[in-house]
Length: 121
Image (cartoon, rainbow, N blue to C red):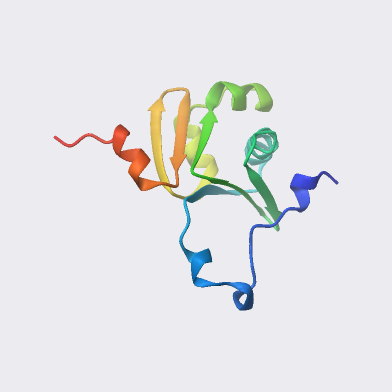
């Protein structure tokens, strides 16, 4: 089994300290599916990404920001995936999700960084 399959970002409650509760982490949780496995396997090759396989779910977590490129995911999946269908594949996420363009979805763990992509009318 590959290392990324056995990594786990979760700590038991008794091992948590206050400093562990504030972070710039971000990530997605996906129902286990063909799409989710393709996304997870691709993202596991990226530096700083942790993939955790759970019963019926897969988590992809990172620090600061995670960039999902639809063309890379499409190639790994063997068919086209759009930013919209990517969002459907992700059951939930934490961090701020921003669709930069039709090929790029970024999750930001640091809310200050996302301000460059938010405009106020």
